Length: 558
Image 1: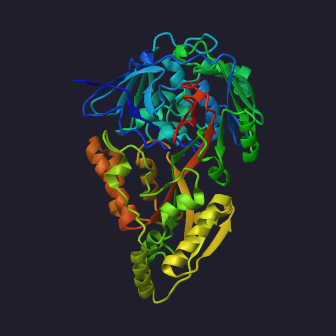
Image 2: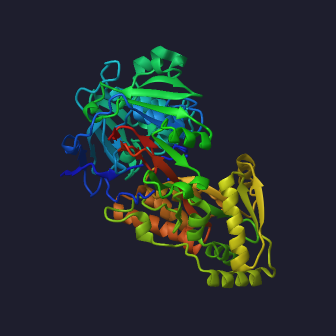
Image 3: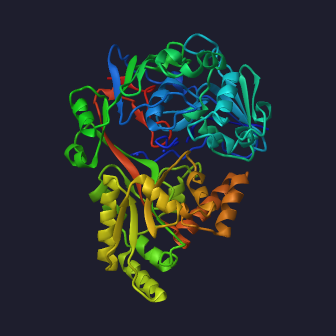
């Protein structure tokens, strides 16, 4: 028996500033709930939406703070390329205005009783921008390309970790026919997974999962993606010009299946590396939206065009258990409890960042009624008095009062946070710590070589599920503090194959508690945020806290 539910679920970050944020607190609905085989189909709500005014000749203009190095999806891994590709292409599902995954090129999908087989049903009449029919074979070709050794974006794992024989195909040990992606017919695309993955359908909003037309890509050879003319598109927009150092211009794609609900005719992504130049361009009405650095937040926070959000990205302190001082749990707990995170985000960052109550970011999916953070509560609370007691007990156990050295990367925000931590530990523990500032590469090398005491680092969600964070600490590497705990590993490994969603969630809740509260392996600090100005006549320009960065599809001019 099949349970039919509307596709109202939350979806994946791909932190594509990774693949690495909000007044948004996150949806708590899921597109695939319940036990048995399921079918998810499109809502009729799109046709019921209030018609927004057409945009006319106005141009929706946003900016990228670095060069758009490539638009080739199996080579692109940065936020800049995602800004463009997400608006010129589309996957089986797409994030909506509320950051939920909705049917897109697929009008519905079914999940088998064992939750291993996903069957996606494409819409009728889908076309590429040149009029070529878009079929299930386009997904097979694109996904195999992403899983192959030809993919250079570092994100093959986003498929090979889940799809049957994907990893073997990547390693040349299996043929394309062995991989669990099949076109059953022109409109039916089937995916077979290694293990139940509750968030799998939500991964398909990511750029790496977009289709590609094999005949077209092959005909262009190594010229594919180097210019706007050497690509065809299946999303709300087509790219009309592209220069890595300048940006990209886009216009509405009349062949797009939902073109009637795309209101802005013209858009652009401009490359502007300097934040001050971008703000000046915004003030001169050359940009529709601009991000503010912390130095400018105070000046604009009362402006009606101001807004802020937090992302699914957590900055945290990683303790090295192989260091004899940090091997002491009381020392680790003292450091974590001595930091006032509320003051950190309000007085130091002031950019929309949110204080960490745990490793998993605010708003990330938990179950149908509550977020993961709501379910697990605050497990890294500030308590200066208790922190001092833990410090004194730790020093007694060590037989000394140790000097702590904090390793940090050399950007201005991280250095400001490190200085704040230094002052907090001085005030609440009565100690002076050393701040060791290094380039990102040098810091990473020190952490990889287990040559640090504790360090400031971060992780952004690849998808909207706690597993995107928690499975990082199962390998015992120096970068993750050389943490080895059989109980923790069992919780994560069992959660990977658990078919009961409630049981799986409980395992992940226990794992976070074990990592943060019981073992104190990391000390979460804050969830990164951003503050923006958006022109008052621009409505519906959506910035996701994870996954594709910005959506033009829902925007319109008032």
